[in-house]
View 1: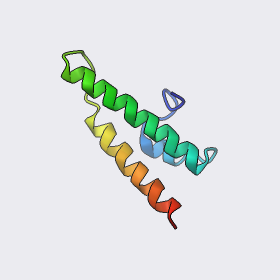
View 2: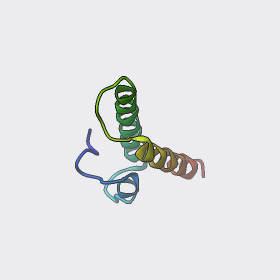
View 3: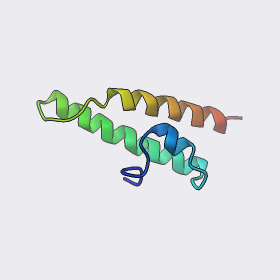
View 4: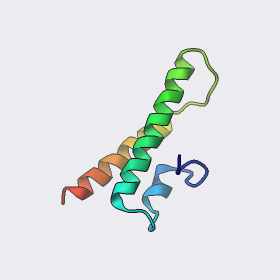
Length: 71
């Protein structure tokens, strides 16, 4: 979880100059997967914040990165 505690938002991660395009994609995918797991846990009655907003932002960031890699 390299993003944890380092980036406050997917935008912060996207703006990181020291990460390669592929590293950004991998970190965003991991972040997305972690938030989805948290959402599943919340749906099963476990406590946790609302990860849906961050999931939306991660999805947008991944779309931008994937679009950029196709050009």
